[in-house]
Length: 345
Image (cartoon, rainbow, N blue to C red; front, side):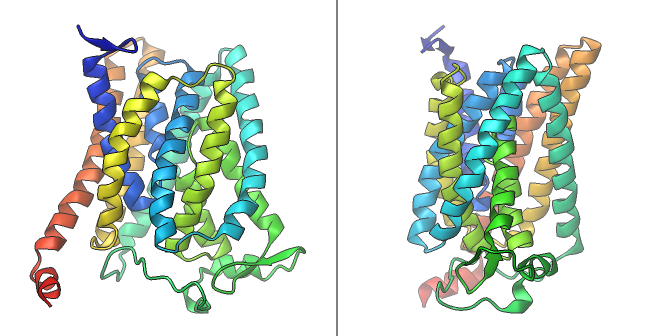
């Protein structure tokens, strides 16, 4: 059978296809999908160190592509992004050391998997609940952000207003006139950096909501700034893991090749797809990701290897479901009479 860099053609095709699906998710949601890559690699039998390190290297590559797109749209707050890099770097180092310590004890795979189940399951339930509550969104994720305009207080979540009310110096002013303590930004950055280093994720599926709900940054800017920060956290994290042989380029390269194409589709869809239509699918994807890792753990405990295949099918199926929903909604929007009329005008 044909092999490239020691990887079979079938496996390369699988990685490229998976990369396309994750690229669509990355471009649309601003979340890298590494929370699916690392569990998938664990299910496929890769060591914890390789699964986490290769996941971070993949995050780095995809974030560079997406950040350039959001920079062109004026959705990156560099002051906020640079501030977060400090806390993220410390968190990454702490997370990496925890993984290496647990690996020496032979506990890394189990603990990382259990953490994934709890984290993905909890966030998935929250996102699905919020989506089912309904929203009045009548368009895609807006890319029209005025960097000089102050943000309407009504658009800021109540939790963020409370946090902004604490004047703990030094205070910094962000885009839109938001004032927040530097310590709060560093705390959010450290927490997400710790998760990045421990789980091999970019942390976007936590950092982006945290920027909006805790700091009060508008969603488009939160997405763009999150991607900018992920670019550094993914680069630093993958470098740290590469030093201990934790990055497998035969995994990362085909994933990046596929995601580069998928990210362009996802980014283009943000301006025409109603985000409310997709949120529930995204929440279900997180829940299915948690279920996939849980199934794998049960399979390991019971000695049932077939459950590993079920787990992998759930991971790939969840990514396919959400990416397919994004593409389908985009095509439906393009073909709608309103869109055709607007294009004709």
